Length: 427
Ligand code: HOZ
Image (spheres, protein in one colour):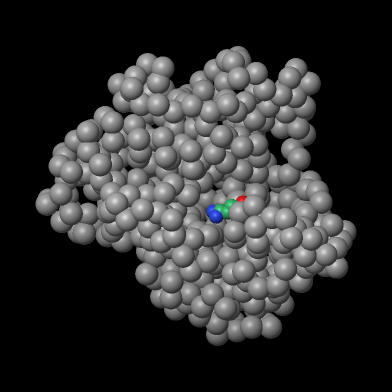
């Protein structure tokens, strides 16, 4: 439950900010009650305005892989800020972060930084359409690629949470440029490409779906998409806004050995500051202005403070390589949550990969959006409230990924499992 001060702030915010928030899922509509307003964060913990502390599994929805207020990220951002917060002119740090991204994701031969993942996706699709001279883009039901107009069709994450997978305000003509298939459905993809492959500009896919909850790609799914797009001369766009530098140092594409034509990044590469990026083969990316006819720009694109925070994050990740440990901790958490649910005879599935997990309240194996939707979202809401009461902050919506950070400790895990045991008991 939100404390007294959070409640008062929410009431006040609702009088000025739409719904009291600046991004819908934060309003807690999916889990009920008022949202918790945060005052500060340090490592794996966040403190709310009422002075309560929580172990945080939201991590600002992904960027904070090193935890809150990491000293090296702070120092880099502070130093950059002292030199001037924005120039609207090139700076060295943009080049350095670009090189770090390319070194880790070699398919991104040329990179353009933006201020959000949404912008990156929107721009990558524009490039794909210009490159192929085609209009149609295939996405997967329950996939979420930011709030790009034409992709707010059968969209997961907040859109689904609010019961609006198809947003109002998207012209029907734009929605028609989006083709839809179920995630992990290899046969459906083959069938579609057989008839319409030559009309498709691009396929956009999260290599690990994280916005219908965590759903891993089944064997052959991404490989098939790669083969089909290659054959029909469409582009394959990997939306690695969540998976980039989350699963491994680099992207899912590196570990899975699949080279997309274009990649979208965000979250971790900004170290908690607003950053997105898109990039790919030089011959494709050089269509972007000033080299080519695809226009895309941004006053704060490549902002030096954000670039410095992102670069410090990548450098720290590279130096400390916390991935194996985070994956191990996530696996332990997953196993324990599963056995607790079994002990109480609760129908629970926990999907996990690397440092991400989602607890689904269903008997069904969750492998696509249809099966994710069988989850009892009311049970998730009760579980979420139970965790909150026990001092654990999980994403306030079912169709999201809980994230561990490198700052999470064995003690945090124990504390979390204790809270989870009580939350399951109450169910
Ligand atoms: N739907 C976003 C996460 N997948 C929420 C972002 C936010 O509210 O900050």
